[in-house]
Length: 471
Image 1 (cartoon, rainbow, N blue to C red):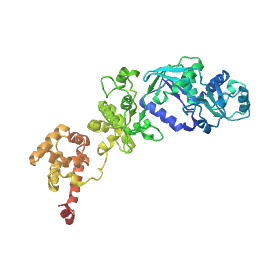
Image 2 (image 1 turned 30 degrees about the vertical axis):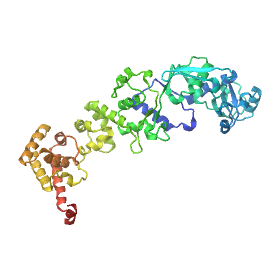
Image 3 (image 1 turned 90 degrees about the vertical axis):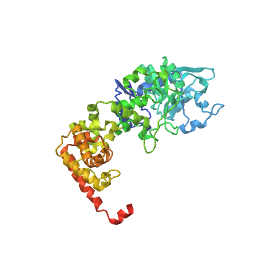
Image 4 (image 1 turned 135 degrees about the vertical axis):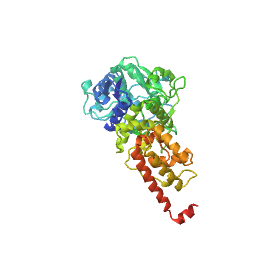
């Protein structure tokens, strides 16, 4: 795998964006064998530009950049070229360049020959366009020349455009297939001309559907920053294999309509011919940047992980929040919450009570069972504390003991278990009760039950006027 950074657009390039790309690729496990920066290959790009100029395949355009689009040169009104610049003599061009006048270098697209440019795209099929409809595109951006170059290496100091740099690098590195976004489909006609000028057969092209926002707008890091940043998903607790699974289903699907796919399964099933032509919508909102399907897939991949592997991944999220989650205890907690989390970060709010020395404040009214009162909750907790002091603290023994305790109080399981669950977990919704209590341990459970009994006393001190209002 070759990683090549198209970083010749200085205004849009930054160290932070480059590092974000590297971090995202490494997280996804998409390692590379060779690495290139186009900004470090400028000499080669400029050399090829000089060769095109020497062969008459390119010309200097001294038109100010802001005025180019206002000079229309076709019947349809689309800008194709500036006749005055295209027809400028070599002598006049050299003179103006030597005087230091800024210019861009443009490719001299063949015109008036009835020529058709065509290629077969692996996704979009046969593509063709008249050369007369292709504008004289820039090879080097506007540059200032203090003197006439005397050799190719002494040529122009302008930065190469995407068209020139990418094609020259593709040719130099022996690239056989170019797979990129559908928005570059029309650029391919320009690139055919550059490959022809370089004297090589064009690579095979495949253009992929674009990823668009719910409103149909193309995703942009300027407008949709968190949504398009891979590290956003990493930091939120997506699994890399789940994220790859999600990305592959944007514009492609296996013939059997499977959605949960491992990388090996994707590799075996994927073909460019199976890629859809319609743009793929990423469903997100200002409140939630994550597509529900991505979240669902992540939950499926989480459940498919072995407990020990998942526990290791969760450790980072507990450590970040300052919770003292030892590897041993977290390993015991992980199977209790695996079915309850969709993102790795969800594990912290789902299981923080396992690692707290004291529970956060909760509403004492939560201790009261449905169709019960504070007195019933108090009886349940007192009796539970008595039987839990002597029973074995494993899930089966706890199950048997607390069901027997419910029978002795004449209660069903629900009214018996709710006060205990809230007492030991600090919430109504929690992992399976008996397994949770076994992990917390006897002393912790008894302490929290005693604290819950104290919390219940606060309900007895509710002012009389409040009770009347509640009734």
